[in-house]
Every structure is written in structure tokens, then in C-alpha cells.
Image (cartoon, rainbow, N blue to C red; front, side, top):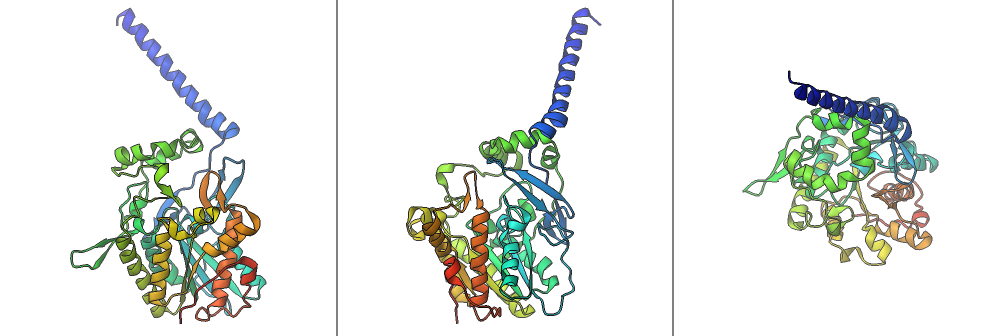
Length: 394
């Protein structure tokens, strides 16, 4: 071996060793004790439903210095209940809440999410109830139907409450290529106008999960918000999709370019709601819906119809009226609280409901469940406390 090659290989080896030592210090010292990132929350498919790894905990650290605790129970859902028992307690009404990250309780402690607050509030008003929640980050309306069939029905709920968020509609039929979006059930329209359900694929641990297992990666990718700017590139190169992040097109945390086909939004949402109603009739539970308000309209003192996303609220109201299902638009509850207190309902760094909004949603949902005679919770109505309004379709 020539001296020149020996020197080159020695330098290369030293450089490699330096890189390895630097990464080791970052991983095991800097990003473990000094600048810890969010804990890792893993996913798994059980009984055909993607969820979180049962029996785990994770603490998330936020830009304002807050932390929030996620506690995944034995069934794979964020909850204060250690497990969801199939056996029913006589005299206790069981309420199931099915949804996405808003039901999961993103950015708030496990006991600050609205399903937990709703249970405490109902008990305080004399109801003997238990509230079970089934929330999965990123799940669309089509997946709610899948979860209802595969997970919730076995627990024999008396009431199923489904919160609707503005990205629930298009993502039910638009195939999104991300780490586990293919694990959600999707819908497609056949040439004859019928609907085909696209079964979810089983979640499989991949390279993205291996990267997320490194504290250094999680800090540099998530804590610096680099993921927002890299989202389009990663979607195209890594997943083969086209999910661009363009803030000028974002309203209510959705890209208005993606939700523009309101005919499709209505068509597929009607299918899901009708299927859910059919299940409620076959299995004897009461079904109700609430929907996030257009918060930009609240802050601006304008009508929700002035915003593109407001059309989705209109679609939800129309469909529930057509199908005779209880429905609550949270617009009025948020507007009244904003007028009285002037405090926003999300974080400066994220659009999810903050602790205040979760309390408002819980109280408004209680008024819906107590105020609609078809749901069967005979409680005194206290809408003056929350400013909530609901429609009861006879």
C-alpha cells in the first residue's frame, strides 16, 4: 500500500470516527439530557385497525415551554382508562367518541381532552356514564366508519359521538401517501356511481420509523419545524405523493385547493353518514355529530360562509338534516366565548384545540347529548353556560 493511500485511508477513518462520536454525543447526551425532543409514539395494526402501541406513554414538548402527556391504554388509544372492557356495568351508559387527533387529544394532557372533560361534566350533572375515545392522528371520516365497525361495535355503546374536522372530507377519498395513511380505509366512486370501500393496509414498521427512533432525528426534523418545509419534497421523493405545504393556501389547517370538489365531499360524506346511521339502527345505539367551527371567521367577526372551508360545515349540516341525525356546529359556541373572553382556541404554533377549546367542546357536546330527546340523556339543559346551540331534527 502506498504511503499516500495509507494517509488518505487514515484521514478517512479519523473523519468517520469523528462523525460517529459526534452523533453518539448528540444522541446520548445533547438530545437526551439538554435538548430532549418529543418522546416516540409508535403505531401498530390490531384487528385491522391502526392505532398506537398499547401500554405506552409519551411526553411531547411544545414551543411555548409546555409539555403534554399521552397515555396509551391496553387497547391502543390515548385515554385515562387503562383498558376498555367489553363487559358492561349495569346502569352505566357507554358513550364512544370516534375521531382523529382532536379526539386523540393532540397537544393537551390526556385528562384535558374533551372526551374526558365530557365524562366528568356529565357525571357532575347526575349522569351515570363512561366515555371511551378512539382517536387516531390523521384519520379521515372514512376511517371513522372502519373503526366503528371493527372496534367500537364490540363494546356495545349506547351513544356514538363523531366530531368532524375540516380535513375529514377530502382525505376520505383522496389517497395520501404518508407514513401510515395507507392504513386508513378510503373510498372510491365506480363508473356506475356506487361507492367502493378501499380496505386499509396493515401498518408496517419501515425506514421512517427507524429514523424516528433516533432522538437526533426527531429534534432536527420536528422541533425545528423542518418537517413543514420538507413535507412536499418527502411526499414526492420518499412516499411518491404530492402533499405540498403552502401556507398561503391553508385555511382551518387544510389546503383549500384539496377540498374544492364539494360535490365529491358531499357524495362520500353522505355515504359514510348513511352507513353509520344503518349501523346505529342495527345495533341500537344513538348517533350524533359535532363539527369544528371556522375559527378564522370567529376571530374576524365574519360568517363561516365567507370561507371556503365553511362549505364543509354546510355540507355536514345538510346531510345530518337529510338523514335525521343530531348535529352541532361549534361555530356559535366558539363565537360567544370569543366575544366574552377574547382568547383563541388553538396554539400559536398549531391549529389543534387548546385546553380552553377542549372545555368548550365538552360542554357544548354535553348540551347536545342532553338536549336532543332522541339521544336519551335526561339532563337539565345549560346552554347559557356555553353559548352552544344545536338542531334537533324531528
